[in-house]
Length: 243
Image (cartoon, rainbow, N blue to C red):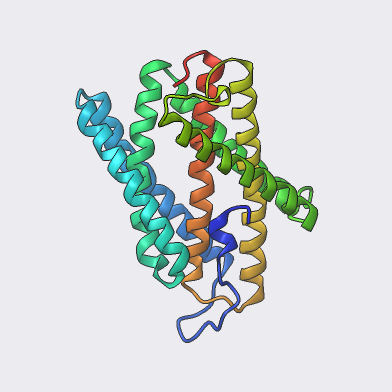
């Protein structure tokens, strides 16, 4: 897997009577999920920045937890994506709104920088994909998959050690923290190429059911949210204000 969400996707199934997955439909649903995420993030952002920090961060924590559960449910019940994907976007918006407000309080202007870099990276990866400069070849996928798994294991190890008040240097500031944050951003960006490839091949096959448009859009949102949060972390490290 690269993006574990799209890796589990059962795109090649009988479409039934509800139509088939198309690229345009997936793009439209991705845009809708993005709007839901932004609107939800704005709500938590305003709560935190408006003097209700405890309530705002509470929304963020609940949103992150429920969003994780919804992501797991969607991975195993892909036909539920038309319902679970919008709720996932709503919950993740609560999370990133709170996290963004926290980073903004430490480094003014960091949120708009992270947002611009995220969308710029997305646009750049899409251009490279459409221009056939970067494609998800088997070797490319192996490298990105290996890097992604390694990062996930590092996150898990860092979380476990933090329970014993042990902090890994890769999650701190300094050169090591900056290098690790940069690697995470690069790997998250490269995951977009694999996402694009899977969605395009599935849409072109004409065999994927209509609800897979929601699932494909959901998979892209998972990568975009990871990329955005990684951008925040990198910019925070570069500014010297790390968590």
